Image (cartoon, rainbow, N blue to C red; front, side, top):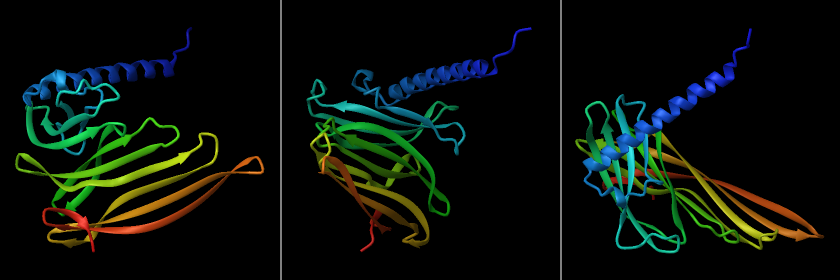
Length: 246
């Protein structure tokens, strides 16, 4: 009697499910692009994303990156985009909410990734926000650079309202001789919703961690020194969006 390869069966099932999901997502993406009346040839399909909003049944979130201008979009050219952030009801086949992020640019510091953040950001007792993270990086080995910006949206009627705009959630930069000697700086920021409120919106606490790393050659060996500093920033709602508390 032959043994059943359970691991193999599970792998096949998972592969089939993933493949079908990708096909469904691709079909939904094409349909939403049509609803937005965007020329599909102007869409950066590699960076555009779709993700189910598991806390809202039947809803899917799209970030569709549309090329703007006459650039041929080679790696060396300045590229300009607008990002269509869309909530879509997959059952009714309707766009329910949308917002357009304008004036996104990609050059030597290239727009490298877009992702959704569906953590439970309860900015009001009856209002949950969701995030979109836009990342930038470069190709330099000697002068590496990486940045991530977070924007939080809430739903208002048929619109998406950005209540936190382009907040720097991650930044890493540095320079070195590609062998040892050099200096690097990294800052990570994580946000938490507070119980206190300002103008009807809960305040936000941001925990920051900054790490400075210095590499140097000492007696033929590469020595590494690190210095970490933690800090806290508070954001309060003012004039339509969250601002750093002064």
